[in-house]
Length: 532
Image (cartoon, rainbow, N blue to C red):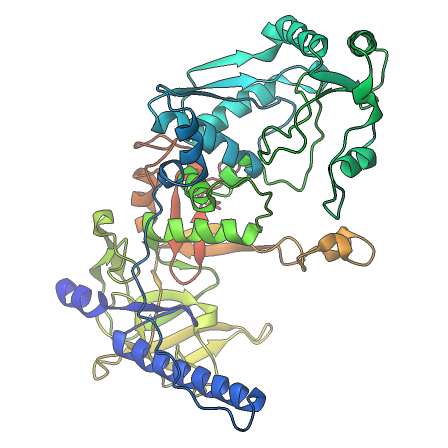
């Protein structure tokens, strides 16, 4: 019977619009109906805006859906800007460095620098130094040094060595004085607005140097030594390089040294610690950087694009489990307990047979999500309702609801009674379920933190734009027994800094709750009964 069950349900596909698992034929019908409706609406819109004497054109045929291609992490080094950089001065092995300031935790903005510096050297057979730019002791803490190295290794990179700028501070200072002596650097006192104007301003006008660039070598040396001796407050003076401000190469237009630099924490950044805790795999971050590529132009990337890349990555790399957020029992009156085989990766959603399958008990009482049952049926509703049939994933037969009971106080449905519908071979949709005796867990669903894309523009400030539904907690959700195997086989996937069995924290226990979302165990406060 188990083989028959598996064969009957292996061909299920996901309806992206409704989130339901349905047969191929049913999805085909729905897709055709939606396409027809969309085409009709498009034709009406075109007719309303087109001139009366315009020639009618045949609508182009929709392109066939192509297989999703997997991003080559080395593509950014093979072609484009970084390939041109290497060709300008081809040499092997390539040696690079990543120089973070240990005055805070690394954030998602650092991912590109890490992946490019380490990846570029690795691609060309070289190595990368992790150089801590520890020249501001007042802002530095030991925990930042430790966290920076941990995150670099988590992304899958191994430094040639960890070095510290403070060990070479005198050498760096001496080199800065040499730059002044050969008239390649000067001490500047301009404020931010003045510097912006010198760079062309908002209208991208001509670039020009400030009057400080004309100071004598003696004056600049005296000013620079005054900076060293604490004569100026932070940002009152800085060493500025005298480079070609007209050159098209942005590297040659860089004007500031790294000697007396400082930074401030921006709490809108997504730190690697927070991203890791949420279960984002390091391989997804590396893939995101590869997708972005490298250009010389400044760019702003929406967080939604990052999240889209993470979802695509998880879709092909993590197993699927049946999870019920708000369970309600369904008593199947003519059912007996059997064991069914459930694949970790359903054949068409998408393909990854290497994940294998696992056994789940099918019990006379199962639990479904409360949202999958309606007391009153309607034509556009395809899940369970009185006298309506629905399929249970991998179950031997569809079920038909025959009655239900409610709590008189709350009005909530407390139990549904059903029977097998052995006459219906192909129900229109399938829903997930968990057997009686399944593990009870706490599940947290995270939505957008703010209600709008620009919370700072909200009346009264960004705090008035907080989304009250940014975290929704289901304290008594239920998950099927396959979770134990998924946990034992973590990390999911084995990639980047989580490259082998057991190499990864609880956050590496990742899976997709069918028709719900992607999940990971919380490494901070997970227990056997409080998982996410």
